[in-house]
Length: 117
Image (cartoon, rainbow, N blue to C red; front, side):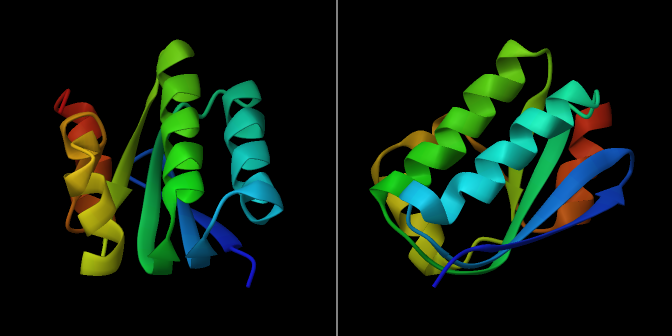
């Protein structure tokens, strides 16, 4: 199953809504491509809504890290929102929750950009 990608805006941030399984490889190419095009458009504050992500492996986690590193290198940042336990657990086990900013809701994550959080 490929990852479906929709987008919206919240508090000035670009919100990428992912749905399906985040498994890396070709399945996350649309996600990576959208990060790069958002940077070209000047949208460097991105919230990734993961409420509809059912599963994520280490490659999917790697694609999130790559997106965050790319955004931070461009003067922006990426925040994650709405993670279920199956998606949150690998992030916590690998201690990446100390690097990736995780919020309960898209609105909370988007509002965090204005607070420097």
